[in-house]
Image 1 (cartoon, helix red, strand yellow):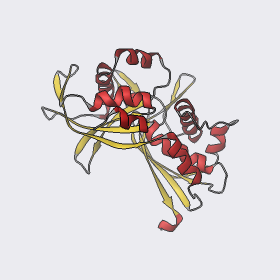
Image 2 (cartoon, one colour):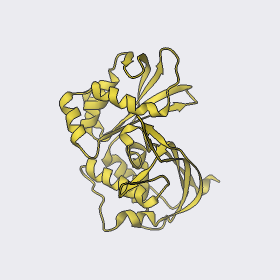
Image 3 (cartoon, one colour):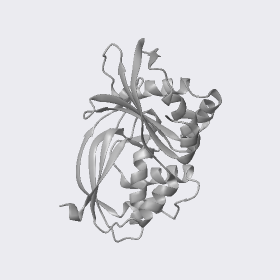
Length: 266
């Protein structure tokens, strides 16, 4: 059971709600924008207003199908303790059936699981002390469509420098004890990686009636493990599994899984 005592021990938490429509209709990843509306209806009004006024949200959420469990999962992630208490707690206690006005049907919640929880302090200490010399490659497997935006234009393809720029912004906004800063740091971190493989496809993401140019697939990078900044790069890529990548992460975009291949695993 999710409670305030548990919440205060963590500053990063992933809540998985297993969902389906009572009538058996398919749930598409685009449904994340509808679920975002349901989320906002069930949290404190004052906190919801605060979120509407913020430019960088302390949460993200998305929908995906888990083939191993044969279920659709609504994943909601709190990026600080305030979001865990004000968003994840009320969602954990949603009724078993929620009426969705847009579809005029009931959504059923069949399970509620705290998938993962940790803290910024723990992540920082673990990755800064972890041995990295055996890392051969890192793979980003995008579960939902991702995109970036610059000067009003969408950028529907990976850009490692933009990866790190966004992750640094989120980390330094929501982490309280370990700021990560430096001149042109995102570019310096990006320079540690070379693309060694990719299988990507153009995968536009729809939010209501708007189609956002985006990409999906996997993207593999070979790192320079000897550089002193490499542990920071790995820390941020791991943090990205919580924080997401690119734009519209609160509406379902930019979710990825990170896997690391080591030299001794061959």
